[in-house]
Image (cartoon, rainbow, N blue to C red; front, side, top):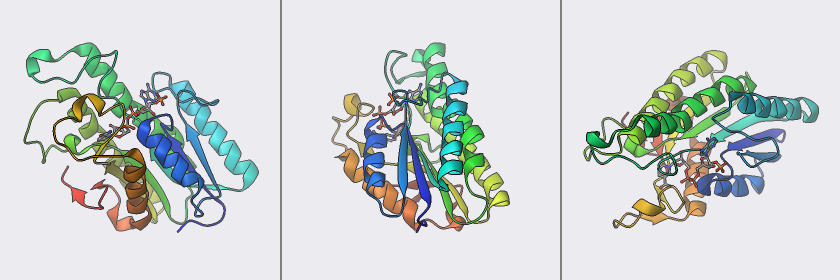
Length: 236
Ligand SMILES: NC(=O)c1ccc[n+]([C@@H]2O[C@H](COP(=O)([O-])OP(=O)(O)OC[C@H]3O[C@@H](n4cnc5c(N)ncnc54)[C@H](OP(=O)(O)O)[C@@H]3O)[C@@H](O)[C@H]2O)c1
């Protein structure tokens, strides 16, 4: 449970899952304040522009310094699967450098730069949590179906970054927790074209509540793991 000076930050608060996470955190008594950041907020975060990530982190550092609040929860809810940059691949014959570059930019490089600029803002003592929304399909051990080369590989890369950052964070704060999260299949723009195959597609509000419950129940021993919305650890 966070203390009364706690700040929660959601990056990607304009997305389906990010918006639901922010709404629930805004009425969560564990946090004095919840701040959302996305490409459309006043202080914008665009992964194609590192300076925007740096400026957003500076604004959170200033907010903490002037309010006495501490960043106790960081949730990164950004992601890309399909759009103008292309569609997920069914075959290696469809691999496309422009699509691969974009999917890695948004799913891997962007969160890495968020780590660079935001993880130093986490307190050096006491419980603090960084949750990066990944995907089960990023699990190499769980890959039985193939396909979606770029998305799978970009999320596997994210998982490695999260594991690596978790080790460094533990060295600076033994009570820190840094995890990758699988939200399940959620009714958002990201899943919409692919959600007609009998999958259990859940509303974003339900997925957000599950993820916040999982984050709330984690211990430092859980750091570095890929964890699903039911609290189950998944293989990397
Ligand atoms: N929906 C599912 O079934 C499902 C399943 C497994 C994993 N996930 C993961 O869940 C997370 C949330 O996805 P969602 O379903 O909520 O999808 P979504 O509604 O499409 O949201 C995507 C988010 O990514 C952000 N984003 C995209 N490009 C960006 C860029 N260049 N710079 C900064 N932000 C960028 C968007 O920001 P703007 O608001 O600024 O557009 C938006 O906040 C993702 O990591 C996704 O991979 C989703």
